[in-house]
Length: 438
DNA sequence: GAGTTTGAAACT
DNA sequence: CAGTTTCAAACTC
Image 1: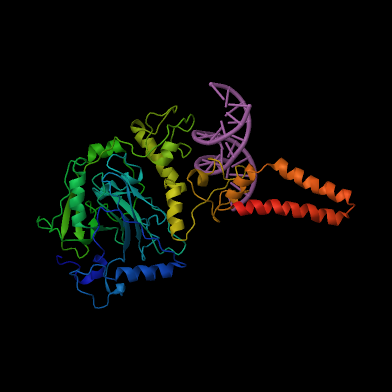
Image 2: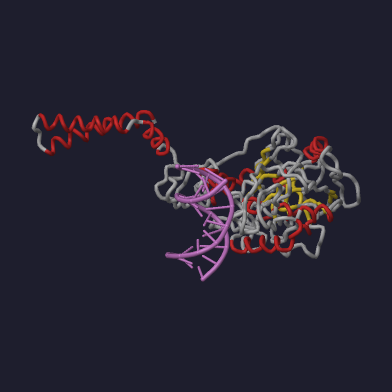
């Protein structure tokens, strides 16, 4: 392994197993507190995972305060199919949540396939050269100790990472992965990903580890304005060949990454909208809220298109002003949140029992949680099943049975209390049958 | 296909 | 923050 790290980085931060194209399952760990999460993360960061790692053990491997780099942990799930999605979760223990670079920790971000239409988030931060933020700048959990972000490059999948306190994008870059990515995505990209050092020499294949992607535009870097959007059309015009410097955390090496954008495809399955009054510039519009322009929709007076870029941009800014996570996938967010014991936004259903598609949770195939404010919810484990079973039981049969008990009590001239008990016992019997089927 | 219901978004 | 209105999708007939 090539020399890297330097004095300002924990060498073990680099010692994750190489990213492969084999499907790996996301490691999901339940943490009761964020502190335990951080402890665990730190322990994992400092735990060499590769027996043949050439990285020497640090003097104090778990004292990250000794290194002037953000602590960083990433979970990666890479599907085997080259053009499908993969997800990266990142936890940043010391993210400054007060900065504009605070990113969405709940987002189970997905890097779309090369055939996907860039979403708003992908079009964020165009001044970062080839790297597009996939997630919105959303405040993190209450303790403000973590944040995550996804970045897309080459219209494919270069890396996942996050913004550090210096507005640099910290990503894990595995050259072997990149090489494989190049091979497998070469039909989708028009420019190759090149990894070079600062003098133009190509980095050796063994140069794996974590890198800091430095914004190509040094002026705009660090301003933290994530509410800048570009349309796919703009990207297509402006980015046929953009460059961004990639340097290692020690700042001694750099890589040039060129990208290509494929703006005219839409990967995510989405129904055509039928908006009539919102101009498709409000979150009522499914296309708009999904982060894509209308295409082949049945909307009237649509402004969610290239021809109305300025208005569209203003609308996006307005939505993000009201809610920084407005364009976040709720289902993905909640799944990720639940995987870590957090809770998402939740629904507020009152009349649907959370068993119809009016309910966000139900539509996303998610069980309601304590974070929901729904009334009469049937969309949670067991009860929903019970309701389903109960609906299949012939209510009439049960009523007849109870009535028979009442008549029986009357014939025997039982007291009211005894009759009531008889009926209740029969009712309990039916309930027991339902419970037994659960 | 028209009308109604529903819950989120937007507004006050 | 709460109440109301607007909106578009889901649903019913």
